[in-house]
Image (cartoon, rainbow, N blue to C red):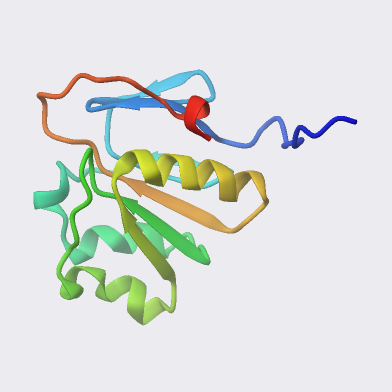
Length: 136
């Protein structure tokens, strides 16, 4: 009996990440980004301390049911005022470290959920590569 889950071949999934990039479907992305199962876009936010409410408007226009905000190698909680665009749009959100956000995104995207991952890179410094698939 085969128990492997089948996913659409064009589904955008995260294979690995490090402090300076993400690997999505074989392509390296060296910026913070917003990812849905169908689209990936650069997100010009220079890390958690630079995050502002206006930055989340880029996520809101995608109209996901849930946003996973990856705050870098460590979990940081933004001020409620920063999350206001998501709250006012009625979009659910979870705040987690980037590794957890990547793994959770892959799981939910594979289930066909209407999810977006807003993933922040840490400032230069850490260089550990994390294989997302090995932990899923």
